[in-house]
Image (cartoon, rainbow, N blue to C red; front, side, top):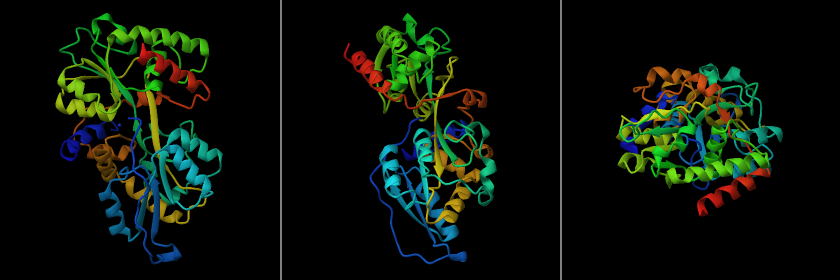
Length: 358
């Protein structure tokens, strides 16, 4: 999706520019080579661990050509896989890891994450405060926010006769057989809970029972469940309304700029992927150099163009070419993180299975 992606991603950068959820991956890779030591004895190597292609190849290549530091890029397929390997390495082996908020909280609790020396990251000041001081790192000592994902409503005003303002509007009978939503238990049950005034992370069995009943009432309006490519149905006009991640919304907007984006009045769901330096990273100084490098405003904007996730860097704003999808800071600050619900997750999955089979 390279050529269209360039323009799409510029739109996304503007959003501070999104998902959530974020990125699929391949198994580990990365080239290794013997490297000379740099000044001060630091080996000219940086071992990165994240999803495939999450750091664009040209950014990695530019970093190496600029600093002489060889990057060994290894990938994981899930946050849980990352945590398992980091635990096995006892906080060592890797120099920089990029993962999701909820798993970083666990890694910090297990003392696998080192505190940042922000004196070595001058561009740390470029981070948009709206993406800082969150539950997993309230004092901003451990993480550098990299990208965010936020599912939103999008609709075609030519096919919908009223203004959609929030989740509750999705139950309007006028939308019969016209909505596409992601095939995801937590997100769809979550929007149902938000429409009822409850948290995305509700665990009370009685409340979830009520949410199940309301979700079943939404079924006549749902035309399709599609996690990967819901934008296709919006582009073709087969559906009039969609609930999808920001990167997918950008794809739809690129094809039909007349589509309207809705920031649900009941509030947003939210997730942040952040960088951290493991507690026993072998090349911490090189990790700090890379973090400072990618926090440069122009590079940060380019990264969002490639990844199509929401940018977390205020310094990227002057380099954003198109202001098509701007998520207000106040919406981000009031957004609710989707968190681990423990044993209640089994009930979420049961509700979703019953919904799909009904």
